[in-house]
Image 1: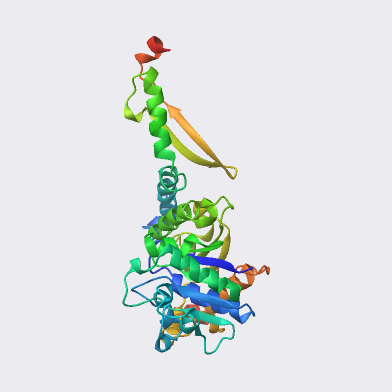
Image 2: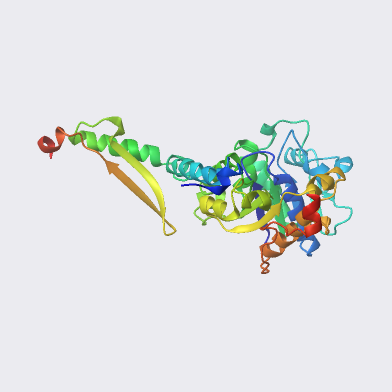
Length: 269
Length: 91
């Protein structure tokens, strides 16, 4: 049975697309047939993060409006077997998405895929609403920063009320907290809220903590999801996150500052 | 009390993380009370206020309704404040 998972946050720039790309890639690398859909109509970016921007011919909106077949719009990832991308339209506006259209495309995808990842746009309007509406589970991406946490809480309220599963009385969505841009050095200095602080406030189970990492930018520069950079802390953290999502026990890493050697300390690096 | 960290001037902006957490706790509690977690809450409050007003003249603020999380259960907490002078006459 296919599972629909929305990656959402409310606030922009916290790492939804980065998380969607790495999460989908991680699931595919573990042998699950996965499709990731960009719901950010008018401001598509998932294609850039996954390095397939030059291969987009038809998009999600084309399929919804019957201008292309689903098979024509699905982009097969060049390096990862089992991974497919459905890009957002760059020229249309957010009203191009219709609830019936989205439902139809998702139902078609359910026939072929194990996991359908919906990369939500920022905000709480139409695109974000439709990205979460048909979901079974949600990854709520949050930065340890006040506006991001507040917006995440707001989104949790919407997940608990404005989704088909809830409206039809089929229970609640399973919610997972993904804390990104975490900086343990600032946490010990009391300059940044800790994982525990944010868990206390949002009160949903923690799936993963992604450390603030230069690798996120460099990976996006080259159009490769950061999970593919196995030497980077963020890449390893995303790999742990995917493993945990699939039921493996993995202790959380990167929660404490790295212990510096005396030499590094003397150099002040 | 003397704080050695203050003497060395290293603790000026201390604990902004705790400040952030405290502020968020307040904001989030408010958001959950009146936000989408229980979208019927404002209407529920209005209706209860109307019922109370059948018997007692109260100001708009007399009825307070909040959703609270207690031991994993959602509980609706309601406060109805009666004005001082009305208390004896009306009840």
